[in-house]
Image (cartoon, each protein chain N blue to C red):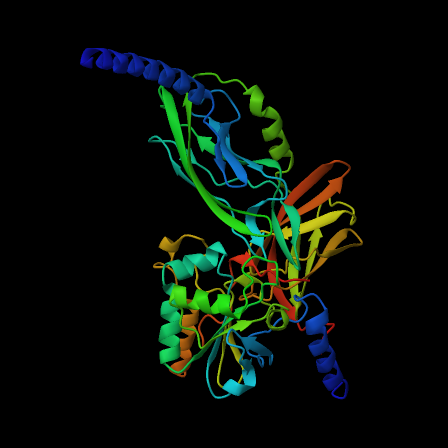
Length: 205
Length: 290
């Protein structure tokens, strides 16, 4: 049994990129999948370069109504600013394929970030969907929190009230905020999984 | 000149009033549909009048543009269910939406549950026993929905329907086919017993009882989110039992509990639908993993 394990893991890793994305999603409590992606300024980033730091991944499509809900109300920017000022790395990821809604090249992504007053550490361009599929990202927004040891500690929605109405933000539990607060206090993450809500990620094929 | 202009205004006012009265008469039988983006919505009633002490079925009629859809109570991997918030006269009560069985809709690698083309989401309205006949009642609803093709657009509308209160009512011929179609797709209470056993990343749902269908052409939809992955389960008959094997939701958070489900079977041109509720049990590790 033990001998077959590495092979099995390798197979699973390979499957993550070839099989339907539902086959091998990132699961909470296990190592977050390593990735490499280029940001809006042409800089390469990998998960391992942030070892020792807490990392937030945020799936983004600026034209999705659910993304607009949280950016229009300033909720996402506020969380980005709060997290990054506390030393957290916040990576906004766009897995929209070229030709699909929300796809952006580097300059367009920079313009979005500037116009929205967004405060991510970097905006990753993932038009081939490799990062999105490795994590099993399904919706925009879809949020992940990874601790300094590289373990996935939260996966799910931005908050607890699935809706496209900005008025619902104030009554909702902000799960990413909550997870970051608990992690920094050395506490267990009380809600580590939730069902994300939003638009489907506009993958290519 | 001024007088002439005033007279003109008076005539216009009278005309507008007459028109308003005519429109009101039309509205009392049928509220105007709202042509929202990619879906037309309208509040309709199955019968021509409200009868004191009885339940009347009304419904949100949805006419989707080709290839566009709205969502079931559990939207699946993305999306959002249609929501209704009622404002009714004192003593009236609206029940929950009686959700017709949904369609399985592929969105790339994701799956959604919802409705296409024309459908109605029926809602029972309980009319108070002391509702005064000869009067009319205005039913008002704030509807909100998400309509999607590949992209999604949230929509909302305030819809009203004014119906006479009478001792008798008749079927409204315009909507009989639509309500009949929705009613045929309403899951019937199956009375089946069984359980859903979680084994690692799999969930095996076993059902037993009278009238279980054959295992072909079946589909299954979990009413709650965070229970099952949205892909179509596999079905088999095991003796007198029907077994469905699904993947556990990757967002699965807690067990035990109950799983409410809708089972459907395509029989020729018609779709049969049943509902069942089974306990959810942690049964051990995934037999296929290690």
